Image (cartoon, rainbow, N blue to C red; front, side):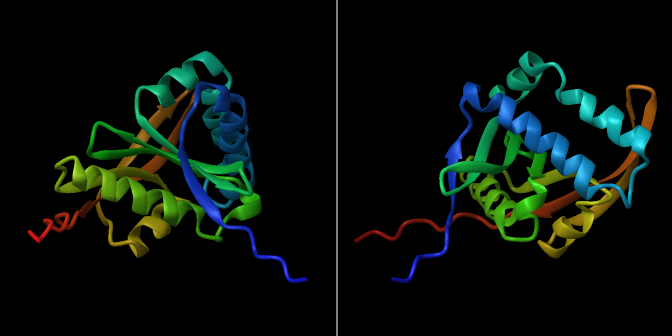
Length: 169
């Protein structure tokens, strides 16, 4: 009997997701950013998830979506206000399999439906190409102080298409 391949699904963030999302955050940074950031930079970045209460508060204040595979969280993204992607982190085991694209597509639709005409992101050097392939355009380079380290990223933005108006029947 053939089995269907697992499908990615989306659901909203729940406070009890915090420890697992912090782990996805850490693993994503450790496994995926080594070509762009030093070990010291990675460690400083990872420390942002050490305080689970603060991490949960940050995710809870934003519209945070979780991508799941067979019901298990594998990636997450958050929308700050209606105009900025604050976080996008994909577990390395599913990197390149569509979880990030699914999350960003959903955030773009939600931001557009809420009246935003563009979406911005401060993308890590690792994630910059992902966003550029999706139509985001670089606006400026940034240096961000994280702990005792400085990390470079790039602010990119994308003009959102207007949601289709419903046609009267």
